[in-house]
Length: 242
Image 1 (spheres, rainbow, N blue to C red):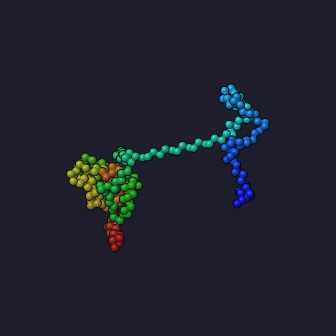
Image 2 (spheres, rainbow, N blue to C red; image 1 turned 45 degrees about the vertical axis):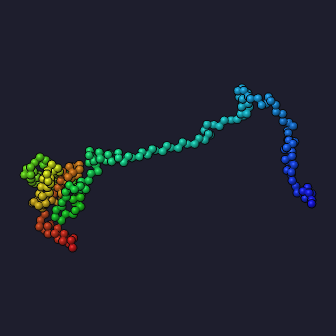
Image 3 (cartoon, helix red, strand yellow; image 1 turned 180 degrees about the horizontal axis):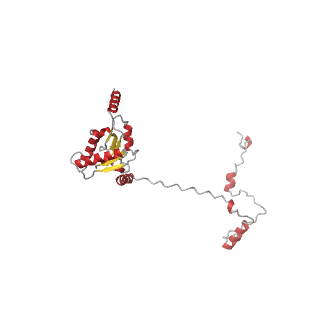
């Protein structure tokens, strides 16, 4: 059997373990290098450290301040305050009570509306939304039915004579009445079943800023509706129902 040396295989680290165990591994040294002494391992004092640092930094030129790159600070994100739902609801309620904001009269059961012969229903909506300038108003608070009726008749006659077509009548909501609000019910009756029905274009409960359901806008005609108007309106009604 042939030995491993005769096999021709090159094994450069074959004797490495023996060399390490004998601590006889040769270390190359630089003949110009000064041997290290105990003096070299002595810690330096402050003066020596300053001198050594000066020698190392000799010839170093500091960068100009403008050349130093400093990252731009990121803009602070605005704080997003979370709205307290309860506080928001209280604010809305306060605006409703103080200024009537958010209160839609036409969405309440007390809302009142009516239109005359052959009048487009959109006119009533426009009247309620305040698109007609109110030129006169009448306050019936504290009056009985007879006194209120007399004042109402005189007020509308004066409005027609002076060309005031959009007027406001304040009658109250009738919350102190045991049954239905008296004056409010009478206003609707006088406008729809009395002689004034010929003169009425439309009437609606007022906006909150003008008294809400405690007041009524009235839009008057320049001339009363005739039988011709009523026949035409009746014919349109029949056609729309067919």
